[in-house]
Length: 68
Image (cartoon, rainbow, N blue to C red; front, side):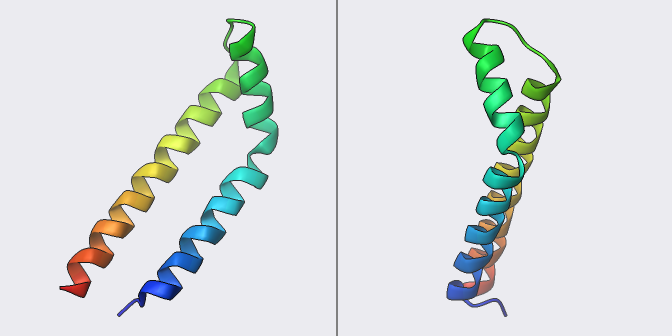
């Protein structure tokens, strides 16, 4: 069974990897959106952010159901 402290560390590490690993895409996507245009970086940023939020929410639901 996954303990809650370990789960928090996992989420923290995944968050850091998402931010620092995708920093280039986030910066260039922000610049593109600021100029009211889109490019491939915007698509990559949206897709990875949505996948990250989805996977964290599923992990939270699984951890919650296991703790009951």
